Amino acid sequence: MQIIYDVKGRMKYHPEFHHNTNKHWTESDTEYACKFYEVDDLEVLAMALVRTADSVSVKINTLKRQGKYEYYKNLNRYW
Image (cartoon, rainbow, N blue to C red; front, side, top):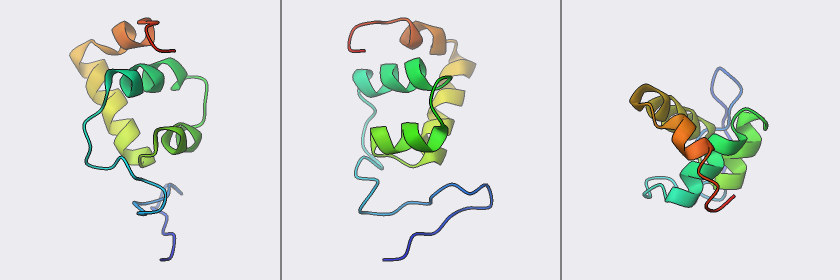
């Protein structure tokens, strides 16, 4: 299967790389995403979480809107 990128250069869903697509976000995954969002490149973060960059971006933006981003960023339970 061919790898396809969106207009922003992000890899679109590919079954070999994005096993967690459509799966529930665990607290550990959420903490990891918030803790490393400002440190790592979005693509690197997405690959670490086995999700698409778009889904990670949407999750981060949702948490920021809900006021939960800082909570998970500072949780220190898993990472």
